Image 1 (cartoon, one colour):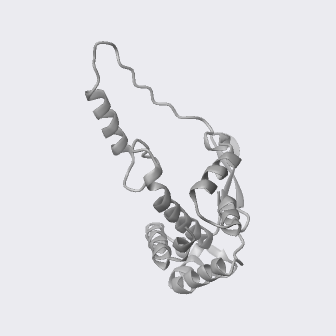
Image 2: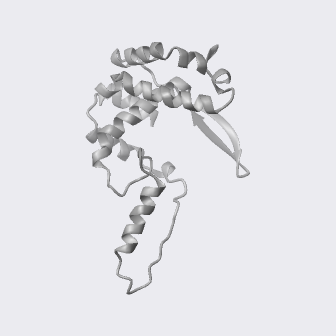
Image 3: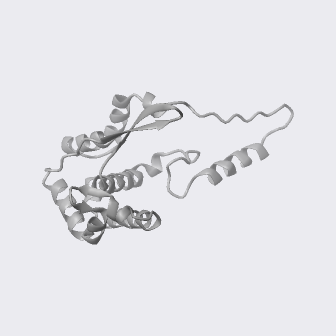
Length: 182
């Protein structure tokens, strides 16, 4: 996996995603600051410099994952905390996600469609449709859609990290960077 984190093409894909988001949201490029005085427009204009610096820090093991920024918002009449990272961190997180997806894709069930590139609602509906067509309708069939409240908050992270550690070939430094991102 480590070699994938040094792949400039993965970074360029993330920058392309960022450019399309910036183009679709008026003023985002000049109002979003990465650091004091450095706008998102500057980061996009200097993407090669940002990519080379990110890769250099990873290769030299000097990269430090910053603490997420907390923002309090009112959702459903409740005060909630949202956590987010600066844009350059989100670029690296996207690269890590691409690398992990490339490594883990063949280990996922074909029935798993959430958060997978090229899959989604229509794939899931297709699987359900095929399943229902193949059923013997001698008895009633019920379909229940259920959303598990706070599912992500209830994942036992240490168990998740154990599983990831067994699937990903990386040293302690990179694994700690990954854990902090998660």
